[in-house]
Length: 328
Image 1: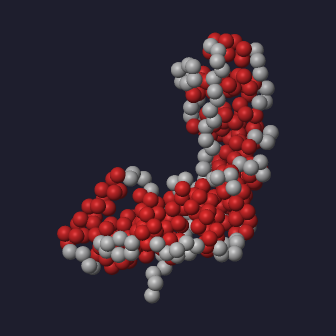
Image 2: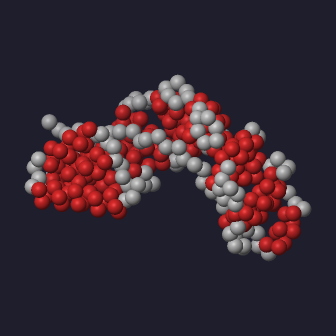
C-alpha cells in the first residue's frame, strides 16, 4: 500500500505591524527642527522618525516621542498611532498598554488602517483590553476593507476557526485570497492548504501546489511542508521523493513539526534517501517534542525497537544538538 504523507494546516498567527522608514531631507537637522516647530504635524512626525531611526542624528527614542506628541496635538491620526506603538513597546516612554490602547483608539476612530489592525491584535490577545474575539474581528475587518494584508489574513483565520465570527471556510478562503494576492506568504500557504483539502473551495491539487510554492519560495515553513507533501503524494505534481525530501527538510529545519514527522518517515522507509533508523528516530523525537502528537511518539517508539543502545544514544544526541542549535 502506498504511504500517504501528511497534509496539514498552518497554525494561527497574529502578526504585529512593521516599522516604517522615513527618508531624511537633504538639509541639516537644525533646519528641519526649526521648520517643523512652526510647521505641520506631518513635518513634526518626520522629525520624530529621524530620531527614532537615527537618520542624521543619534537614535533617541525619548526625543522621537517628544516630536510625535507634538504632532498629535492637532489630532493627527498617524502621530497618534505611532505614539501608541511607542507606549506599547516601551520605547522612549515607560511601557503602558492602557495608554497605547487609548492612542490606538483615537487613530482607529479616524480610520487609520495600522491602528485598526493593532487594535484588533490587542483585542485578540487581551492586551490592555478584555480579550474579545468578536471585537478583534470587527477591527480586523475595518483594516481588511482597506486592503491591510495582515488584517485580511487574521480575519480569514477567524472565519476558519470560528473565532468571533461564525465558522465559514468559504469566507476564510475569500480573505486569504485577498491577502495572498498581495504576496502575503502566510495567506498563500493557507490558501494552498484549503485547495489541498477542499476546505471552502473544490479540491484542486494543482492550485494547492501553485499557492504553496509561492509561500515556500518566500521561506514560509508551512508552504514548504505542504509542497513536500504534494511531491511525496504526487498531488498536482509528479511524485518525486527526492524533491519531497528537499522541501520537508527546509520546513523541518525551521521547526515545523509536521515536516519533521514526514522527514522521519522518509528516513524510516528509505523514501528518497537511504534508509536510516538513527535519523528517523531523531526527526520523530523532535516532532514529538514540538507537539506534533501521538503519531510522532508511536513512530519514534517503533523505530526505537530497531535500534541498538548505542544507536539510540546517537539519535538522542543528534536531536539534542539540533534542539540546542535551534532555540525556541
